[in-house]
Amino acid sequence: MSEIENLTAQLEKVSKQLDNTASSADVKSLMEKQEQLAKQIADLEQKSVKPANSGKDSPLSLGERFTKSEAYTKFLDTNARTEITLETRGDPMLTGTAAPGVIVPYYKPGIVEQATRPLTIEPLFTNIPISTNSFVYQREEPASLKAAITKEGAEYPESSVKLSSKQGNIYDVTHSARVSRQLIADLPAFSAFLNKRMAYGVNRAVEDELVKGDGSDLHLAGLLHDGNYVPHGAKLASFGTATSNLTDLLFFASTKVAVAGGYVNCYLVNPMDWFKLSILKDSTGQYLVDTAKDSGISYLRGIPVVQSQAIPEGKFLAIDTVQYGTIYNREELTIELFKEDRDNAVRGLITVVATRRLGFAAENPAMACGGDLILPTA
Image: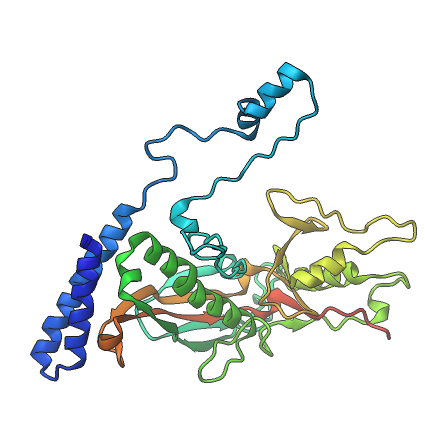
């Protein structure tokens, strides 16, 4: 019996004892022993997997295998027509063995993961760490500025500046998953799991909230929440031409932000809407939008276009993210592990919890203009 088989037998024995034990002290002792045995098995399995080229010469290329084949040598000697088939050599550790007449499929190592979408919204905004569960900021209301040339001895014009106090709250964005002890023991695999599933899941939910949060008790007030942006309100007469197109609508919205004192540093659009914008053509068949990218960034009339699946299809924003708002971070992403959760003990599972705590404030809504990506008809 190999060392792995011996440890596996011990692990099964401990698991049976655990099922039949009622004493909390005995359960704790058996769980610790179970964890130790699982770790030893994982370590041995890790050591038993050797690199594909360990102790061997580098594999020959197709050309080298071809020119070294007996059939090729025979062809050089006889000039007779020769057919050469180069076999694909499988890894016996992956293909395994089977009974006669049974075809064993190839087992690809690792896990084929689900695709993840790019998260592009959060990095656009100022991010401030705080240590409380709420935040307060002062918003300036439309001011009446009366500055003017003043005659000597005359009374100075008096301007009026009003401030209003606004308060926001911190929210928890979290999720959990139960994983095996073997995954916990496999450091590279567990690290990838934390990055690509736990952290990504939380950050994707944050991005969705930053855009579509409805401002209710358990949601952020996102970019598209009523009152957090200025609807473009475009009319047919706004463009002054009968040949306007969707790119004119985006430019119109960015102009309204500029009139309000902002500087639009990006357009936010859904990828499908950017596709529709990118294929617009003039009467001669020439594309209206130059889709060439500079350092991976698309531009529309000199303004960067940020694509995000969090933006609903058919919506857009022209935004000055510098002056618009702030993300208030109460806690960065935290990871917690729990053994004592439901039936983890008897199933050999660990509960993993990922959490972020943050708030978001649209401090200057006039710095975002947009809405429906539809040309007006009247």
